[in-house]
Length: 205
Picture 1 (cartoon, rainbow, N blue to C red):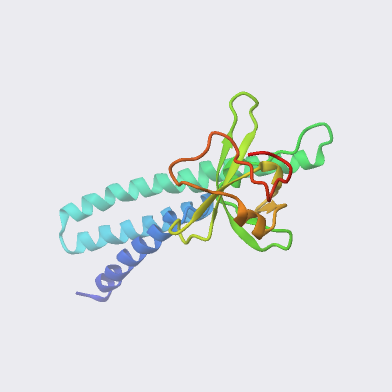
Picture 2: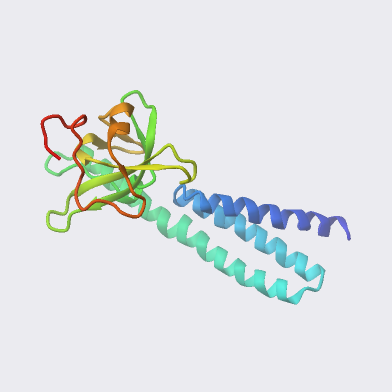
């Protein structure tokens, strides 16, 4: 085995593992798209390894994966990135306009950090539940305390208690108030926002 084959033999699995972690992180279009770039490097390296070692099945498989990975690069660094830029510009324009409501991107909100008034992270936005009739947000599902979804606690939060800005979602509630909200079952969310007396005094459940 020459030095080039040895180098490719290490680049191929390393690139594949790094790319898998980047895409699994679901950290936005740019990170996911960059993950597909690294995937492409890995599949090309595997193709060269297969060519040097005369492994036809491995070569054909990774040539196909290279095409798929390049489509992923276009999908996330091309198409999706342009959509993200478009939604961000619309949100910025709405801040300057007087006669239109403030806009925010739902896709940018999902996965965004939820922070308190001093910038301390309280959780992550998992989903926005919308009402069909009024086209408004019924409640926002926030994940707390988990690592990669393991051991997380889900809570339904009144959108009036959240400020959707660029980047993070700012909470009007403290960490204590958020922790006092009832936890949701991971596969059984409520049909309406649960009301909690400590957070919303004077209102009934």
